[in-house]
Length: 153
Image 1 (cartoon, rainbow, N blue to C red):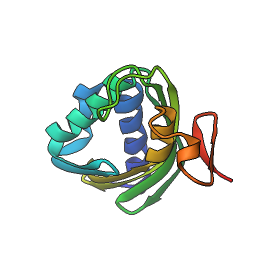
Image 2: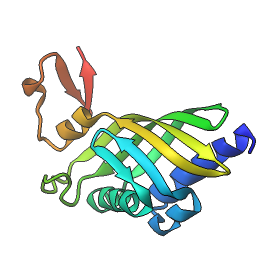
Image 3: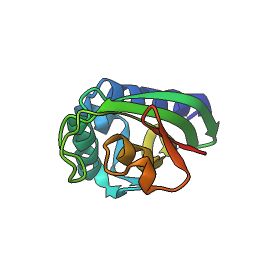
Image 4: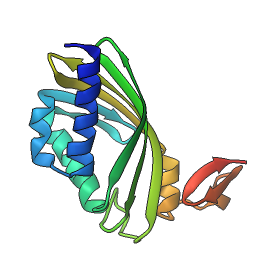
């Protein structure tokens, strides 16, 4: 599969699953034994990953992702992104706060035969916890809360 096709597939995957919230379409993009690595742990297989996606979309019903700098190298597609949403349901044991969060992240996906087989998703957990008011700027030295995002001073 051509590199640009993998790029287009990743963009379609992000838009369909995260922005349009069509979780039931996951099988159109990933293999059954897909593995997603995140700061919250790894999710093994279609069902586990579907649970992770559903959890995020329930907790942040207006969740969206804006992609930037999508790069391709063979079977790998990388991008950085900004995800955002309002914390409306329990998430990671944290009751809904009603707070809006913006979280930067980067993703690296590995494709085989037009499907994602593995993904590495790193996102700013500190910014997320600050937006949910679990951690305040005073608790973390050298950081100031600016529009819900952690910024170095």
